[in-house]
Image (cartoon, rainbow, N blue to C red; front, side, top):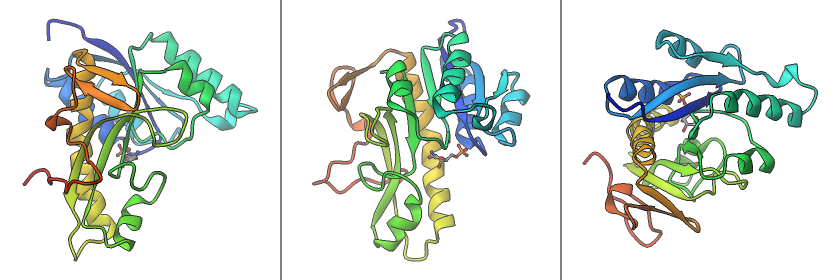
Length: 225
Ligand code: GRF
């Protein structure tokens, strides 16, 4: 990579497989970003080791070391902003952020969620899709707004739900898509190809097929076929 790309800080809480997908793409030269730091709210997050292995500063900022949520978030903001990020990536960060935090990063905070939003915001998405006998499930990358899992959608990927699926098999099929679409969304941002218009995200000036957006009146196309 000749160009250094945009500065990215990632926030994690656990396993860090999405973080790994981003690291892998960046290391192979497919993602014009500099991963400046990985910050975890959990000292035991396996993703911290993934960051260290890749030579990325790995920090721990735990809520229990702060006397209020506001102070915890202020500490988080201070450490994130030390790196002057163009983009803050939530990669399995299991914490609901306040409106103040989210607004501090308006337009430069993104998240990956394991459902086809607006279906199944919140937790236990795979179990809920199975309980509903949903035919389709999937993953969404979106800009973060104060309302949880409701920000403008950048890209989605649908997977078929099989009769034999358990939460484990379905989660694995969805996760594979998260690993594909999260780096893709970050690449578009790094290439400055996205524009937020209300609650829509335009790619090169309009909503495009590559974004895989699920419209309520359309049957989604699974990826890969
Ligand atoms: C992913 O399923 C993501 O969609 C959700 O949390 C999980 C994180 O997994 N927000 P990992 O830590 O990236 O492996």
